[in-house]
Length: 130
Image (cartoon, rainbow, N blue to C red; front, side, top):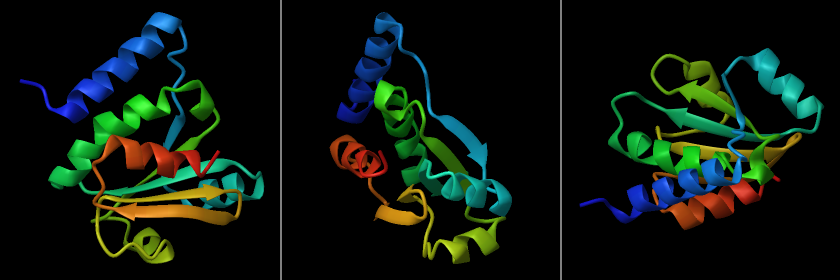
């Protein structure tokens, strides 16, 4: 039996594919130069601090993927920060643990969550970046 989160992700993905709007947000690994350039350009940014071993991070993946497929997020830049190997970035963003999501609109932080796997609250967080 599928969980509520899995059903949400599948429905959102199917809707995007059927409507022909399967345009996902741009996703890049974190580099200081890329992040700074995006901020200076006034872009909407989601920073995902994750770890490959983290079960919460794994649960966030389908939720984030389905939300990022929405038309509203086609200009969103998703920046991945590896919690284990990019300690400089973890410190820069003040992330105390993996599964941290931080949204920015240009140079301003607009929201943050830690350990969240609720599709509705993650969608509300991402909406703060748009």
